[in-house]
Image (cartoon, rainbow, N blue to C red; front, side, top):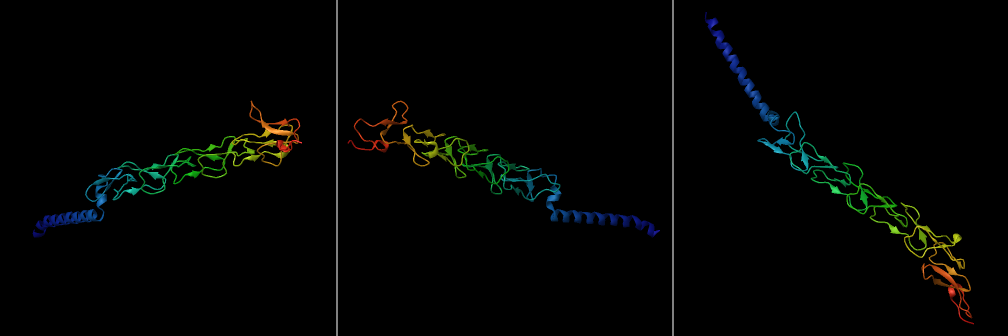
Length: 247
């Protein structure tokens, strides 16, 4: 009879022991993994600091995880975040870049550079024959006729110097006016050369003015302001370009 009365007491003791072991396990789990006990308490964009959920500061993020995060993650290069409490970072838009981690803003490309893709860590220098004259460019502009650019990363193009021309867009160098074609150019930034007057000569490529033949003097047309060769004054001896003395 005594054994039958002892069975309820035995069951109660095992039950209390099981509850104690369960409580100890939960306490250990909470101490060892405090965030896991509050996984549902911190939404995406926030992390658990041991006492409460903290929004991710600008320049960082917290994705939605099965186990709550204990720290925010910094945005990588090419990305940024300008708001707090976010679950992801933003890609640097076209025309900008981000070259550091934890950035809160993207940087615009400077003049002479551009970026035609998102999420980049730097900008691309303009190639020869082109330029960028604004901040945040997403494409380059080709040099126009009469101009050229032989250096990368520039914000403007250079005019073709005297004695040369540029007939195409996107040129990286000017072309010289040719002696064999009797060409010259006395102005800068031109898309073609001028033909020397019939009475003139051209000495060498890249000429900036014609040379009038013997018996003619160099002058300017009153209407067009172009070079012309006029016969020397009567009784005068004219050498090239009218340089001479009277007999």
